[in-house]
Image (cartoon, rainbow, N blue to C red; front, side, top):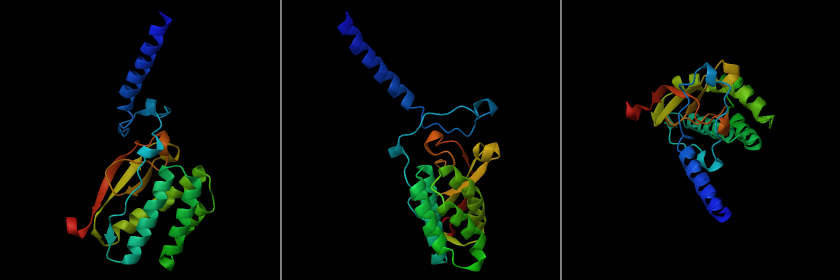
Length: 192
């Protein structure tokens, strides 16, 4: 009798695991206040796909700046403090013009730390400035999606830019990867 219980228990665990894995990709943008303290099942690292740069701005330097920003965002999604710091340094070196001083300061703060909590705090301001920059620059190819997580920044909310409508939350990474929603789309000239 004992030998029959073990295979049954293993089968039951496998079945439950498969059933639960289908729910891990849910979008958590419709969360209410009672959900805000709930921690969601972590996504395996292989499910957190990095962004592939498929946008182009009229100015090549702007394309490079946004590619660096997107790589930085992807490192935050992966909660890799060392990689975030390295990507922030790359972004910082591209922001040479005086008009980028404020953005460069945020990138520098992120680069100086390997603590994802500290990095994410500076990423809030960096992203807001990058959103303004995207809206005031000429996007000639591809689309940018502005996304918002209402739970980030101590439930004050925070924004970021991504290349698809799929939510990949840089403020919580694999803890709440799908928490957020698309708030706006910036279309390249070729798409309008």
